[in-house]
Length: 102
Image (cartoon, rainbow, N blue to C red; front, side):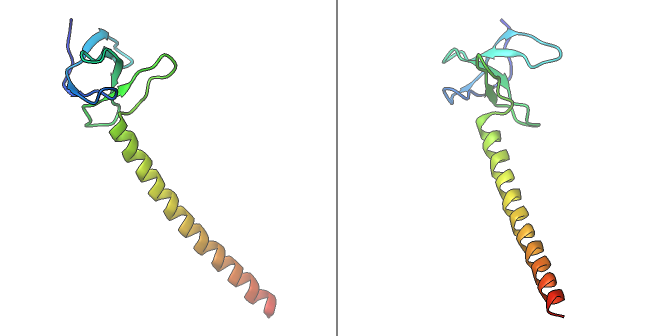
């Protein structure tokens, strides 16, 4: 069987060269970990060579490492948005209060 590039399996966390199960031209190739026999797919994050989980319900887009990175970045963006929103709300309330006192 055809083999793919080496990367980390999201199930057993071993560095593996997966076995190609189903080759696709439009979608990602379906692969299998040779150590734990779980279904895996190449991570969609550019430059990443690890694998994402494949399940009977949903095939993950990113490997666990890239998922953590995206979640962390989204959390930081959310915190910054809350700070900016708080500052804007404070400015609006101060302006409204000063206008009311005139």
